[in-house]
Image 1 (cartoon, rainbow, N blue to C red):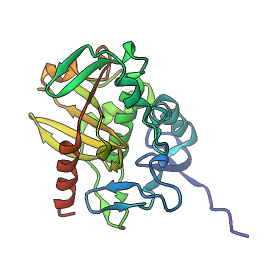
Image 2 (cartoon, rainbow, N blue to C red):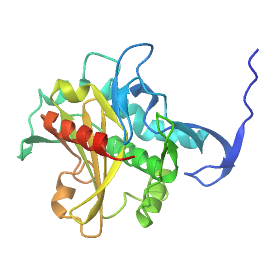
Image 3 (cartoon, rainbow, N blue to C red):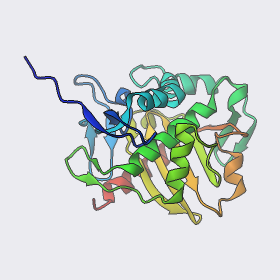
Length: 253
């Protein structure tokens, strides 16, 4: 009989209490394909199919449940990563947009029955998890922590319910219409754009993008999925996805 692993006791990274810690996934477990079914992935050091799950003991049971209840469960319901259907795309393609920006249609989540607050929470929860721990990549190499400074603490207090949505932050959600982007998920990566710290990742047909900075252009707030705007973008993303995959492939490690 396989021995039951000893419980891991430590400080929960979210609530900061000393508790039993449970395994937290960097990217949701549901994105990983069961059995031999091929799902494409890409991180800073490797790409391919069916990676080992990236997980670590970070959160207590209550905080793990909080992440699922306030973000992940609702987002995965709309992504349906293990189904042929793509509910989020199917919903938007029969709805009327409230505007256009560049090549994307813009929708107000409340008008199309989508709780954008859940998408906002999920996006920050993934970025925050990436920032607080040196994750082991799917090939066994370490992924250094992100130095987010004050922005990291603002994320934590928002996620644990001690403060409102972080100021000087915008979260953009693009639902992709192309089949190519639907095939992929990527680990979160960071960059600096428009004098702001940025982070981004793809999850089975949805592009998640965040920007943080004291000089954040107000236009980014107007297309943010966070309150009070609650916007979602919809459009073709293949060229953007290919560029992101190229950048990840070229990154030295």
